[in-house]
Length: 499
Image (cartoon, rainbow, N blue to C red; front, side, top):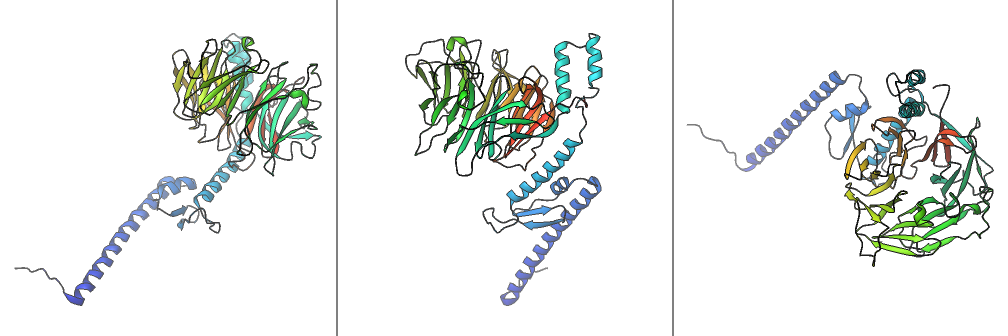
């Protein structure tokens, strides 16, 4: 009969310690064998794969970072420790910078066609034979031109000591004729400056823009958004929303473009140059109405309400909402105002109806996209609306069926208020992501045509602002993409030789 031996006293304690050490050794041995088998399998299967693929095949250890180049783990310390050279944020920033430089080199040496068999001679031959409709031919040519865009740095002529080119760009906004840019610059002392740039010199071998900021505007409040306004003439004013502070309330300003010297020499209005200022706290968005039945009217999206005002008669209407309004656009064929909210809801307000109180009104079209809305773009056929949100989704909605009919994938956004640019004539859709990449899609089939990396290091405060048109520059139009990032302005022009 076998008896179980149970040591007692000091021998019992030594036996337990030996058993614990033995179990730890065996578990570590199993882990090392499993890790080595994973390393061996990854080496044999991947071969010459990239460092990111190798790092994804090794096991992740909490609090440690695996360096594929040195083939070992390093301990991660809290990111708030300034003396720590190795943090998750630093590692991610380093990886993004390596990828950006890689993509810049690839974009420089990229193929000139994004679609198999797409070339100008073949498209022209098909169009001459009647095998290709003229609209399709134009879209394909623009698609081909987009793949051939080459980057050039733009020089700014006659900048003043506080002019453009000496401070970081916040955003740029082109007028309807693409002859002028409204520019907001961020200054080092907490102020920002905004003025206009003339695009008449983009056709030169060295593209230039003219800056005459003898009378720029300065403010210590953040410029949230802006849009061009046609009060006395097409694009005669700029509508600017300033974010409020505890010591200074926010406001919406309507500034005449002729206040900026030499940029509106053909402006012959004899009326005084009046700047309209309306003190409004927490204005998140604004939109100007181009419908002649609502002449001189604009809208402002506020905290839990919408204001519609007439600049000539000072008549205003208030509509209370359940969420902050972050994006707006007027329809031009109907008296409808479309609004996008922080809650992700998109709804329309019928301005033909009479409402007795701010709460006594009903929504027209209403749907939700699931995240905070950042931009609304109505198409020429106003039954369709492009909506982007803070989850990186860009969708095309059919307002008659209230149904999403197209999804443009690849956009990156998690919290920023980023615009979307739709060029229907060229069949293109553009957006700059929070990762500082500019993406261009085919508007019809939502195919990603090109991804342009930022010329500067990607950061939260250096997201590029872009303007795209096939007739930039006024009298001598130059097609292409204008990009403002940090203190530099770039022009991606079509290269006719490559086409």
